[in-house]
Length: 374
Ligand SMILES: [Ca+2]
Ligand SMILES: [Ca+2]
Ligand SMILES: [Ca+2]
Ligand SMILES: [Ca+2]
Image (cartoon, rainbow, N blue to C red; front, side, top):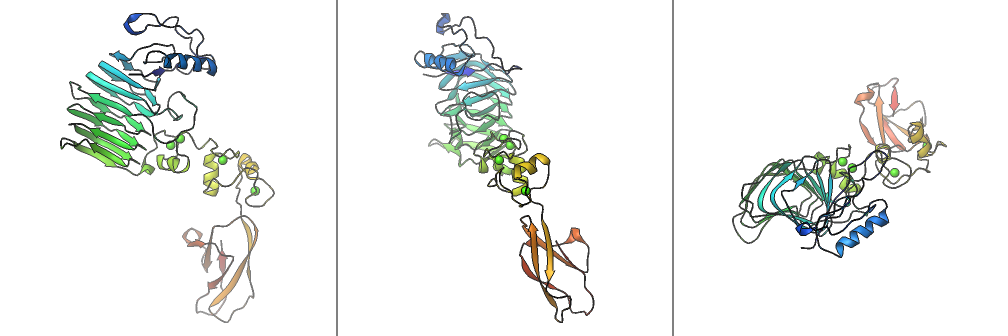
């Protein structure tokens, strides 16, 4: 099995990478390679990756270890792993809360002949920058991994809670008897579960944007309980204030936040969306034509669509029940209009799509009328 898995150094204030290991152990315990300074530049890191690709498969840590399997391995909390091939895990495999596994298209973690336990792991694409360390700066496209997790002949029923699976070709497959996930979440995977003679309990577990939730390989043993579809708008997997549905619809990734600038126009995503309801405006434009660019308005904290207008009536006196009006728009781009007659209940006004010309129903009673247009 040709594979590698990268454990990245934890983020250090000032950005200094951890020192690489002085020596590394390969399969059978022999020292196979040493990369002094291998992580100091991107170029050096590529060298290290190529060296691994040309050798035996296995894990790439912040130092290089060549293995094709690991036994009794713990995926540490607050640590990011890069899974680039099929990695075989035996013995007791543990996922600590906060651990992040990022998969390339060929990535897979095969759990074989042992026990599996843990909680709170995030398994996602190598291009998802919204969790853990960056392992690959490329742009996100499509789905990743072969199967993120594959269970083979696990002896005790694995009980795993609060796992998140994002952007997987297939999140989990199993050849074992029974698998139990509690509060798992599957987002934007092409397939959630593939089963060979396996019963599943997915208590309180949810999914969105998963076209094929289950795939049963030609047998009737697949039993699933407690797995529910949720609208992606109810998830915010990276807790940045944009829902998963919003991010998937507009960005296709979770890499954006309200503070970042998806279209590079100087306007922060959150500000741009809140004021325009679209990302089609830009920083140099002047949406409300007041002489201040949108970027200047953002920086000043002012409203980029302040509306100034005068309502105009053709006459002060009408003999019928309706009075025609026009809106003399001085600045801004109105979206709606509301009209009140003999009422100043502004909060209760009914807003309709904006029109520059219209008529006001004055009612059948003669006399003076007070007309408000907003
Ligand atoms: Ca979000
Ligand atoms: Ca995000
Ligand atoms: Ca923007
Ligand atoms: Ca302006």
